[in-house]
Length: 220
Image (cartoon, rainbow, N blue to C red; front, side, top):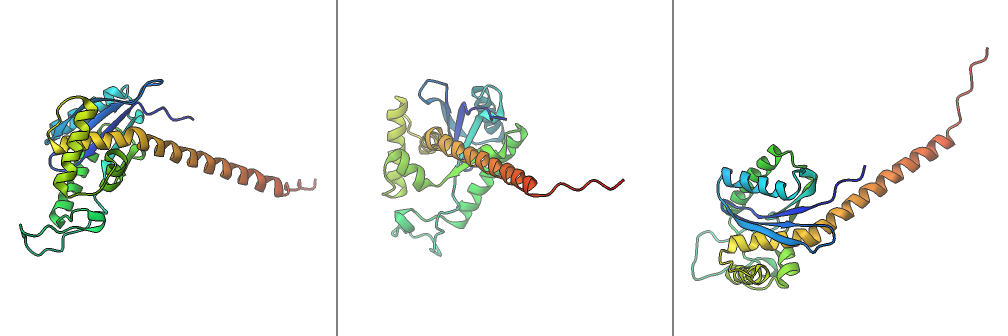
C-alpha cells in the first residue's frame, strides 16, 4: 500500500520553552509557512499538535515532525561558570551543560507524549543536528550562540516578511524549513529503501521456492 503524501511539517526547537514552525505542502505549490510561535505548557503543546494535524487533513500519517537533535552537542568541561571565558566545542559549536542536555531531552519526551496521544506514527518523527540545519538553511555554522540565534531571527524575518525577534521561535521556523525540503526528501528515500528491500525479500523467497523440489506424492 502506498503511504499518503506528507502535507504538513512541524519543526520543533524543543526545550522547556519550545519554538516551533509549521509548514504546509500542497501538490503543485511551493512549501509554505503557515504558523509559528512558542509553546511552554502541555495545553500549548497539545494545541500546536492539533493545529499541525488540521493542516495535515486530520491524518497523522501526513504530518512530518522534525526535532532538533541535541545528542551530538559537546558537554561543557567547565567546573564553574566563568563569564570571562567562552568555551567552544568542535566546529565552533558552543558547549552545553549536562543539565541543559537533560532538560532538552525531557522536553522532547513531553512532545513525544502529545504526539502519541494523537496517534502520530513514530516513523514520521525525524531529527536534525543544529549544525546540519544551520548549514542548510542559514548557510553557515560559524559564530557563537548569540550570533547564530541572531542570524536565525534575521532569516526568519526575511522569509516570513514579518519581524521575528524571539530566537527560539526563529529556530523553530528554520527547523521547519529543513523539514519541508530535506526532511521530506529523506523520508521519501527511506520509503524507497524499504520498498526495494521488501521487493528483494519477495524475490529471494520466490527463487527459494523454485529451487526447492516439490514433495513427492505418497505412494498409494
